[in-house]
Image 1: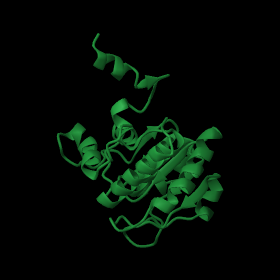
Image 2: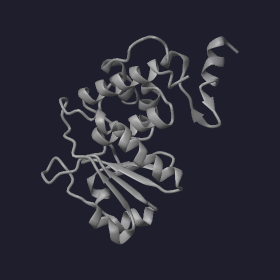
Image 3: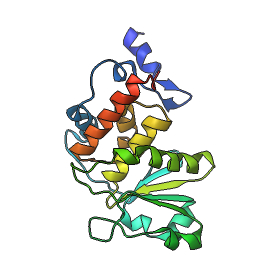
Length: 206
């Protein structure tokens, strides 16, 4: 067995992917690097999801508007928390609130985010990660969604994996992309790169 084989084996601990050595070196993260990870499974193409939702990490679901508004379907799926990453009333957002989920006993959180490169999603990373962690650590299930379940919600889920599961951005993107087709905009990818660099400087991945 080669040294490379040993290194690959070391990236798996107790069935969960761990940051690889080449993911935590001194190279700065780039948008191009993350795009390459996202498009690699589809031969360099950006793809939209084939399904309305996917379990993208144990007890964490990434989905689109239609499934998020199906309260009975959410209840049947066992969802206890829902995180709307595209809160708003126009066609580019999802109009929901805590009142509509109260009858099915689902806890709600909303983020009024635009799917634009100039929108700063970073201030929401920690609060959203705490909400997701509250759900899964308490034995619940959380649906993280936006309109299509590919950009705003995917970015928030990746940030959660970085903050709470101590994955590097590369590892987190690979993990989510393995379960669902995603395509965060370039601005969000840069914000994830910035988060990665900040966490790296603090020794978060050590």
